[in-house]
Amino acid sequence: MPWQKGEEQTAETQRAEKQMNEQIDFEKSDGLIPAIIQDVQTLEVLMLGYMNEEAWQKTQQDGRVTFFSRSKNRLWTKGEESGNFLEVVSTHIDCDKDTILIKAQPKGPTCHTGSRSCFNTPYNHNFIFELLRIIDNRYEFPTADSYVNRLRERGVNKIAQKVGEEAVETVIAALAEEEVDFVNEASDLVFHLLVLLREKNIPLEVIAKNLESRHR
Image (cartoon, rainbow, N blue to C red):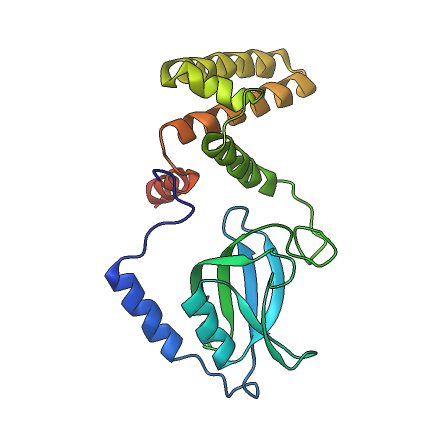
C-alpha cells in the first residue's frame, strides 16, 4: 500500500529499539511498569495499563498490546473479548527505563464504556488527525456517496484546482473581516489540502518534519 500509518523501521532503528528493550528495569516497581498507549494517528492518550516482562514480550511478539491485569492476576490482551485490539506501531522507553510509551492503531473504541479514550479529553485539534484517518478510509473503501471519492475520481489536477479555489475564497473572507466566513473557508481549504496530500501519498508527518527542519 502506498499510504502507511507509520514509517518502516530500518535495521538500525530495530537494533536500537532492541537495545532499549533489554534495558527496561522491571524490578524497579516489583515487576510491573506503566505502559502509556497513544493513538498513532491523533496522538491522543488512549489508556494506561501495566506490564510485566512476560506481557511486554507478548506485546512485541504478537504486535498487539498485552497488559498484566492486576485484578485478574493474568496476562490480558486489550480487545481479547471486544475485538477492539490495539495494534502496535512503535514502542518507546523513557529515560529512566521504567515506563513504556506505545503508539498504536486502535481497532475500535479503547475504553470499556465505548469511548475512544479512557480519558475524557476533547478532540479539538486532534480531529484533524482523525480526519486524515477518515480520508484514508474513503480511499481504501470508496463509496458512491462519498465526497472524497468524487474528488478522487476527478484526479489530481481537479483536486489541486479545488485547493486553489478554496485558498482564494479564504483570502477574500479574511479581507472581508467576517470571522464566521473566514473560519468556514479556512476549514474548506484545510480539508481539500488534506485530500490533495492523500492523493499525492504524502503523509502529514512529512510536512511537519519539513517545517521542523526549516525552523532549525
